Length: 263
Image (cartoon, rainbow, N blue to C red):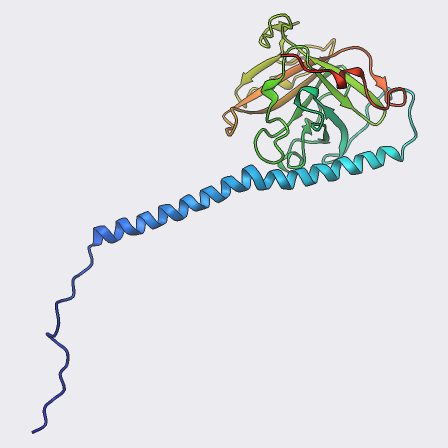
């Protein structure tokens, strides 16, 4: 007699249902690992990849600016009126001896993300180099070239030199040189301050004193504070020290560029 083939029902141990809590926790753990990897990749990109990209952009800006200047006839003196520089165009070099011989950065007009991705950016409508008022320049502190990473290392009296196509402008950081205290104000302007990002008065013609007419030429550098954060802003102020010097007279720049930074 033929028999029906077994259907398999009832054969072997019963299949256990999965633990829903355990499955959820495993899924959550995998999700967190994936999210952590994405965050890590983003941090690596922001801190390292953007530095490489920005450094290449800065190198291009610097080379093109030098080449453009090389095609211009040497001027015996700075122009009476500052040039009208389009947003995104490089127009000067910033030298900060304390930050090293390889620091010089091409400064572009504008402080949008596109401009700051290539280097320090000049706040539109603030003074141009050597002009009465306040030449204000912003720069990233971490990532995108990190031009102002070590801005907190500056000391009272440190030179900051701005180089244009025709002249050198030597600024000196404010503060008390005798004590090294950057918070000491000279004519109401300190060498350094930490402010909320909304305090835009630091780039006023007289830094921190909106509405006051300037009688001096200031240079203000702004960046994020603390490092790896945009919660506050680190601000340093310098004042023009003496008259500008024509690049035709001093092709290699003023003596301040060769100063050995003191502690």
